[in-house]
Length: 208
Image (cartoon, rainbow, N blue to C red; front, side):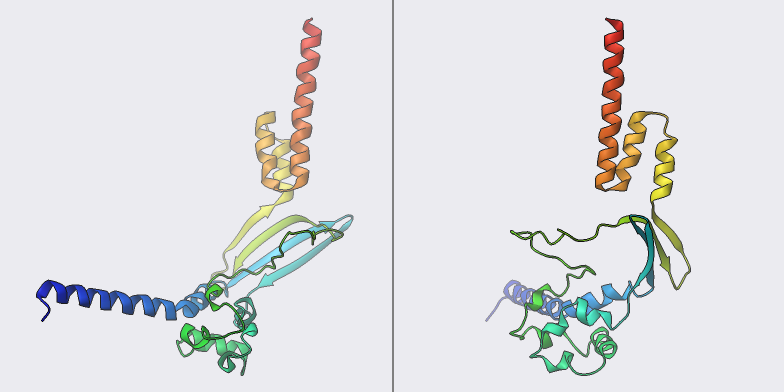
């Protein structure tokens, strides 16, 4: 017969085991809930290349979750392959489709589902996927909450350049230009430093 302490330990481990199992089964729902926070967000972009400028808006729809989460790869799980994608997303949010329903798939690693990103990643082995691809400069990025109407300018290249021009020192200008976060910014920084070296050199030669 188990004593009181032993019984308490058994109950503790049983509770912990149930908690861990519950969290494991809820991984899919947790991912859906995190994605839900993006549904009211809208991102406006202005980009430029050579003499051309383009504008586009990035938004998030319930049916997007299916592809972003990789559910389309689980072809051996009929539960997430039949029906409207937005309905499947709703079933995940409501707990009708759980992680335990898809983790038995042999087609993909379901453990990676909670990690989501609206981008494509390519391994940089011997092939450089950026080679010969058009390069664009980001001019402006604005995030808007379509529910509250809150609008935040997250990036404005022209404003940064104006701030750099109005800087009171080279150090301040260099610090501002780093916000551009691109090769041109680094080139601009090197130009500033080179100019500063030339001024110092001319001053030293003049003193001699």
